[in-house]
Length: 414
Image (cartoon, rainbow, N blue to C red; front, side):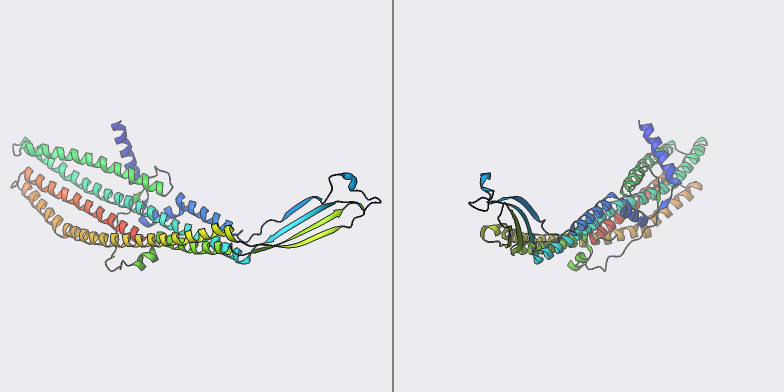
C-alpha cells in the first residue's frame, strides 16, 4: 500500500513538472466564475428578482352563481292568479382593489431582498479566496523547499562520494559518512511528505475552481508583500469593504421596508360587488351593486402591530451584530498587522544576516575540507545547520504569506 502511495505521489509530481503555471489571480478568477457557491447565489438572486415582479398584483376576482330568494317548494316558482312567481337565479362578481400604499411598500421590500444575497455571495467568495490563498502559498513554499532539497541532495552526494574515496585511502572517519547517508534518506522522506502536500493542496484548489480533481498545474513562485502599515482600521474601513456588514445593513433596510408593509396593512381596502338576478316567471330581473371596505380594527390589527414591534427589536439586534463584527475585525486586523510586521523583520534577518553567514560558513568548511584542513563531520554540521535554517526560513515565509491572506480576508481584499 505504501509503495502504491509513493508511486502515485511520484506520478503526480512528474505531471506537475510539465503542467501549466497558474498565478494567484487566475485561480481566484476561476473560482469566481466556476465555483458552485457563486452560481448558487446568482440563481437565488434571480429567483428573488423574478418574485419581485409580482409585487403589485391584485387579489383575484371572485365569481358565484346560485339561487337567490327562491322558495323550497317549486310550486311557488310559477306565475299564477295569485302572483308573478317567486325566486331568481343569481350571478355574482366581486373584486377588491389593493391599497396603493401597500402595493408600493411590498414592491420596495421585494425589490431589495435580492441585494442581501448579492452581499452574501461576495462574503462567501471571500471565504473561498482565503482558502485558495492558503493552499496556493503552501504549494509555492513546497516548490521552493523541493528546490532546496534538490540542491542539498547534490551536496550530500558530493560528501558521500568524496568520503568513500577518502575512506579507502584511510583519510576519513566512517561515522560522518553514515550521518551523511542517513541525512540523504531523511531528504527522501521529506520529499515524499512535500509531494503529498502538493497532491492535497492541488486537489483543494481544483475543487475550489470546480475542475477535475486530478488536473495538474504549477503555481508561480513569485510573491508580493503588500504594505498595510498605513491602512486605518476604523469602522468606515470595514463598512465600506466587508460584504457581511453590508448584508446586515441591507437586512436593516429590509426591516424598515417590512415595517412599512405591515403599517400599510393597517390601511383600509376597497372593493366592489355586482349581483345580477335572473327572475322566474313574470318577475322583473334585478341587480345589486355594492361598494365594500375592509377596515382593520381591534383584534384584527394585533398581528400587524406585533410584527412592527418585533421588526424594531430585530433591527436593534442587527445593529449590535454589525458593531460586534466591526469591533472583532478591528482587533483582529491590528493584531494581524502587528504579527506581520514582526514576521517581516524576522524574515529580513534570515535573508540579510543569518542565511548569508551560514552559507559563507559552509563554503569556508567546504574549502577547508577540499584542502584537507577540515573533517567531513565539520562540513556535514555546517551543511545541516544551513539546510535546517533555509527550511525554517521558508516555513516563516509561508506563515507570513498566510498571515497576509488572513488580513486580506478580514479587509475583504481579493
